[in-house]
Length: 519
Ligand code: ACM
Image 1 (spheres, rainbow, N blue to C red):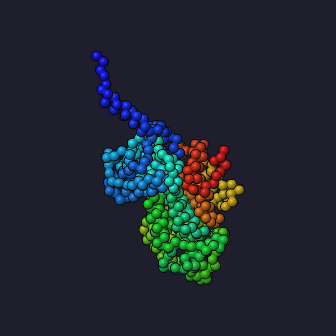
Image 2: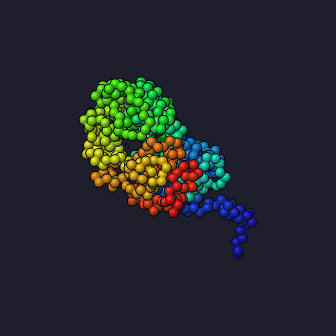
Image 3: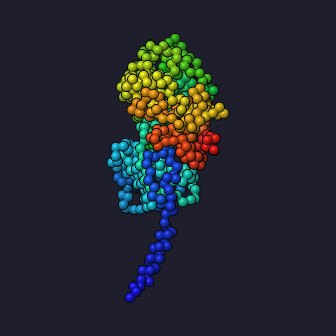
């Protein structure tokens, strides 16, 4: 006899089928998400997760920092979606439709910054060995979402993410940018926006060039004229400015919430005219210099054989170290053309000891390799490979900042309206197509701490200028620092970058729209 399906069962089956087809997730390919820096590995599962106003951001235990990371994710997702996503304590097993952030015990290759991101149809899991890795993975979640997620106001649309798994960790542990706030001064809000833009590409250091011939930009309570006088000028005769220690601490905290370390630089013994104009006693002839608003370099020096110079440095470094949680202080050391070499070496040796006495490690531009380097002193290669090699011979690690590749103040081509070109013009292909560990013969991977892209501001006056010179070159630099050389190539990069333009526009970044992006 034929077995009939009871009517009620049939009805149930039909309803289930209809419901299932309504809620079924559109097929999407994770490999089509445009991700910068390119992750180490990606597996796609060809379905999708939908972010809705019911999605929960879950953290497994009541770790304060993890909870804060959840709130950071919510702050990135809420404006464009118009949702009011919140972080809650809970287990991913309790509910579906959640993004679960958790600290796990991943393989050591993931280090502090690596993460595993698993996107399923009904939930997302982001795991890392530390909150730092969670913060990096959050940037990937952002990029897997549609470009419109970067909008600052509500967009009416569905928010799907392709499913699959990404495993990711950085090639280099130091991935930085430098902003020169001395030649032109930039507000706290500008610096915070810069930090946000760097964080989106998983950079982890912002080096602030806080003093130079044209301006002194950090309050030092024991030497108030540094800002009262030295802070009052800038290139071109503008009014300059400086950060109070409270403002600096606010910047440090803002950066730290994004797991970006602030490295402050006090450039010395050259590049010191702003200090020399503020205090006559720092000059060998005892006379204060005039404030300077031009763009020449190499004409100033602290008086290296006066004791007051070292008292000055001790006070400055002491105050700065007290408000800088990061492990490094940068002492500059570049282009001290009017300091005798013997005096320069004596000075750098003493300056390093002062930094160490305040429990910080030293970074200096490559010229400092002429001095005796303390254990853990880092040499920042920018110009002379002989100096970098000399540093390595003295057991120093190197930060790679070759001016011909990563100086963000270099023009893109001869038509670029701002910027300089003394090192090179740097188009997007040149900025991307190099590898730190093969760039200088004799500098190998084990010698390199990472890479850093400096933006000197002689010709940079506004946040729009900063963005124009930085983007999109820094995206390439972020990938050089993060993605192993064997996974990178120019054709693949520029193809992805063309697709990324719309996101840059939604992020309201004043980027350089190179012909290479249009071809
Ligand atoms: C430098 O560009 N003077 C480090």
